[in-house]
Image (cartoon, rainbow, N blue to C red; front, side, top):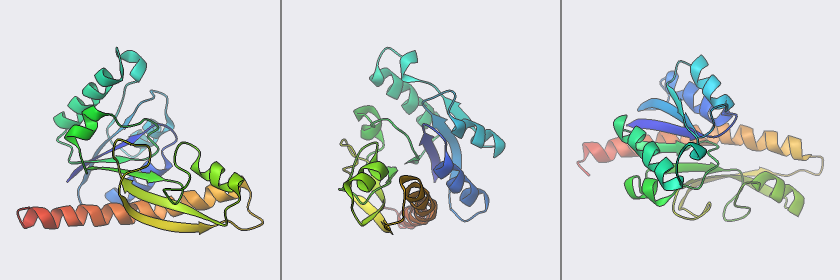
Length: 196
């Protein structure tokens, strides 16, 4: 399977996955990374790892639909089978969803359905819950509402700060996402060999 990773910022989840692909621990091929910000650090990480990187921004297009159409064209030109979101901070629209239904994975820093949206870690910390975690799910047309594939809890200890909780969440993401992606890719290979 040919995989593309979409990211908007730092790219630590991208790098964790890229190392797994390069070490042969993930089946399939990491074809490229895409960012919706020209100055996103994820693009530098990709260059250092010799992985193709592309970027364009919504403001360069007439509207979001035109932006997504250009992104879809890139994905189709590269024959991408699976899209992996790794800190991609845009809601996926109908253009991509209609072509990649059940083939877009996302990771979210909370135990969904609790604390969806942009600030899952901060929201859980400020609410005072004792357990939060990480969720990997399929993307649908809602915000963090798609079918859940896997979750891993993270305890919030009395001595935790927001910063220490963020670090624990990121460590969990870097462990869980490759494991789930490996399972998804292996299952897809099995389905292909069965002719499904």
